Image (tube, rainbow, N blue to C red; front, side, top):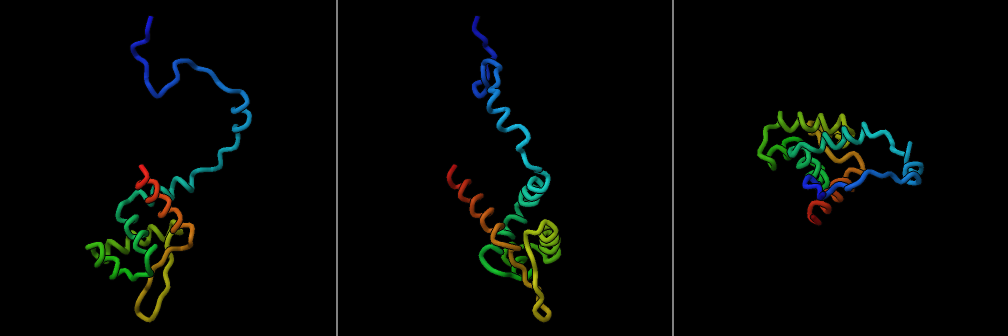
Length: 119
């Protein structure tokens, strides 16, 4: 009798590969911090800010003007990005300039865009 409830992306039988289970059991690293990083980047405005900062160092006013947002809104997003160690700032007189915290952030963004463009 044919099973009419077959799901095309699931096995038709349950079986496990003991070797693979032994090899991979206990190898999953702690994922909390990485999951939090992706949550921060899941916000479209923050992603746009990170993208802009991957291109150049900018002050809050510049970012707000480019994105058509208020300085207050951009400052809020930058605070979240700073807490997540994605951006850093430096003060020059009365101006505060933001940049990406390190090259890892650039790689994450570039790889993400490459993946999206690939699919």
